[in-house]
Each structure stands twice: as structure tokens, then as C-alpha cells.
Image (cartoon, rainbow, N blue to C red; front, side, top):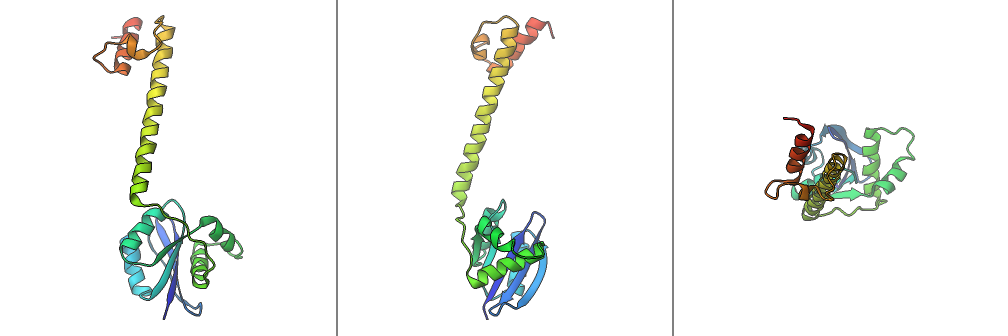
Length: 183
């Protein structure tokens, strides 16, 4: 007997609906949004799962990789396509969304979303962190330049107004404190 599972994932709790081939509800419930808890529930309530569906979202990449590693046939659904199908339901609740996702996956009326690899996610995170640090450095240098200019320094770069051995922000702050007579 084939089973189809819909997961409506949130930060704390995941609503789960398991359907059989005929569309009859085998199990409806909720579980903590942790891969180990989901795996335990899926092994107990859906041992013959043909496909397990969840919508693309902020937790989807992590959850997809964890469930795939545990050996589950998980499918990440395109969020816009799933939303369009689920919005036709009269009563929109997490429980009904889980059932709707299970029905979509059972009937094959879904569009699968591409889930990026863990390496791709790590590279993206590093690039985002670097970009943020570059922005912070630029903002700090501009702030120091403005403070030095208001104190009469004609230096275009805060680093050139400082000692060459220290870090530019620290040297600029020492120069500003010295000009303002702050100990």
C-alpha cells in the first residue's frame, strides 16, 4: 500500500498528514520540527511512503537534506504553485495545508522546486557575510572621514591620518580623542 505524506513546516511544529492510494487519511497529527522527530514519526505512521512533500521556504533546504540523508523520498514543492492550489481550500489551517500537500503529491499535481546543495549554501553564506563586512568597513571609514574632516583634518582616507602600525579605526579614534582632549 503506497502512502503519500504532506508536511506543513513551521519553526516549532510540523503538521503531518498521511494519505493512502485512495486518498483516505491514514494519520493526521503534529510533531516537533526536528529531523529526528520527523523521521521517527514517518517510520511509525508512513512506513510505505511513496513521496513526502513540503513547501519551499526558509527551513526547506535544511529539512530536505536531513530527510534525504535519512533515506526518505522527500519532494520540495514550488511555494507559489502550492499556494495557488492550497488557497482554493475553504478553511486555511496548518492541518488542512498538510492534507492539501499530501493530496497534491498523491495526484501528481505539483511542481518540484530545486534544492541547492549544502556546498552552494555554504558558499552563499560566506559571500553574504563578506559583503556585510565590506559594507561595515566602508561605513566605518566614511564615519571616521566625516569626524576627521569636522576636526580640520584634510586627509581623504582615515588610514592615512593614523599611525601605519595600528588599525585605521583605532588610530582615527585616538586622533579624534586627542583633538577633543578626551582621555
